[in-house]
Image (cartoon, rainbow, N blue to C red; front, top):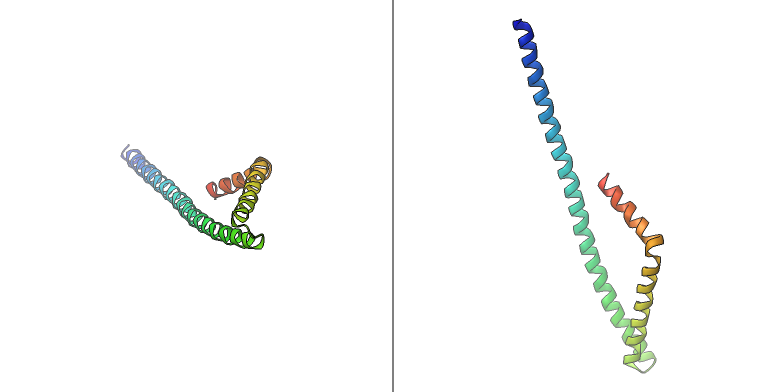
Length: 113
C-alpha cells in the first residue's frame, strides 16, 4: 500500500512539474510573439515616417521644378497635388482586390510564425 502511495505522489509531482513547464513554455512563446510583433510595428512606424518625409520633400521639389518649367509656381503645386490625388484614388480602387490580401497574409504569417 505504501508503494502505491509513493508512486501516486511521484505521479502527482511529475504531473505538476509538467503543467508548470507547459505554462512557462506558453508564456515564453507568447512573449516571443509579442516582442516580434512590437519590433515589426516599430520598424513599420519608422519606415512610414521616413517615407512620408521623402514624399514631402520630393513633392515640394517636384512642385517647384514643374512650377519653374511652366512659369507658374501655383500651377506646379496643383499638378503635383493632382498626381497625389490620382495615386490615392488608385490605391483605394485596388485595395480590396490586390492590397488587402497581401496585408492580411503578411499579418497572418507574422502571427503564426
